[in-house]
Length: 381
Image 1 (spheres, rainbow, N blue to C red):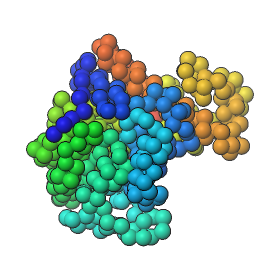
Image 2 (image 1 turned 60 degrees about the vertical axis):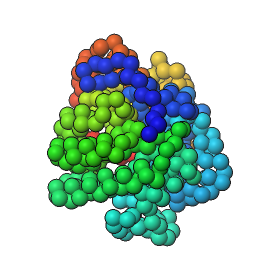
Image 3 (image 1 turned 45 degrees about the vertical axis):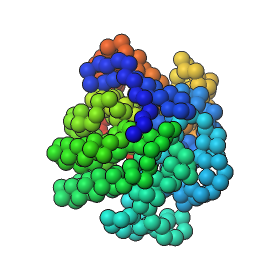
Image 4 (image 1 turned 180 degrees about the vertical axis):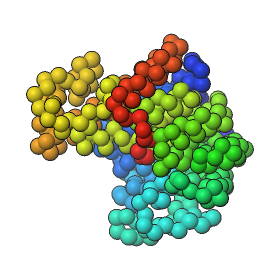
């Protein structure tokens, strides 16, 4: 099975920094992938996203298959051409949205049958169909296997059944994906918070063989502390020579803790969702620009940033835009937040290379505690 080369350039404890090489460019790890759910990172142009330093973005199979349809995207040249993004794209399998957005979804061994949240039309998503949509129609660079997600807390028997079905679906995904030189297929580890189920899942996935491995089924209700406890063992259960991707996480402190434990890739809707609701992420924690204390604050969000949204607009102006419900406020804060998350990843890459991630982590934990933002896991994307 051909693979995108993954070169680990430096380590600091369990943390590592490196490069995942694709035919559309290099992905520097640890990497944060802005979420482009429906062919757009909400409120931003692809040029703005690229200017933040993002090497890769995420597209959403479920939303694109329903609107404008994967077949239409294919007729228009594939997702990269459709949205004018020439760097790598990772697409999720569609499984998360099927479970979370559809009021009626029936899971069988063969596939998931669900009703569209747009018009109620019926659809069937099988492992084979997911591969067709992602690899052939959308043309993504990194394709995710179809898996079954279980919201936590849940009975262990339910988690175990979903994990084993996910492994069987992973085998079918690999068979349908076949041999490709310019695309990669990632498997997804499941198993809830149970170490023995996570180990079994990792073993099953490695027997199948994937280009990379994701840690799925977290940030789905288990809470920050439980998530971190799983990350104490889950990354080490996966092959060290391949990239590890923690799905749908999260807040900056969640990402720092995961990198410390050996995770390489992340995605989350949090930066743009926060931006649309008047929240800016900073090195001192999140701030709410709706707050009256910013009404005459002439300082920018980050005077040292290369991104205009962070550097060139005062907090007073941003406060005005947010309070007046001006679209520009959503644009600027989303742009700033994506830039902040990319700066966070760059700082961690440097800290790992220089052997100072432990100090960076401790400072991050102190800031998160002071800001009161370290008590919950990230928002799934």
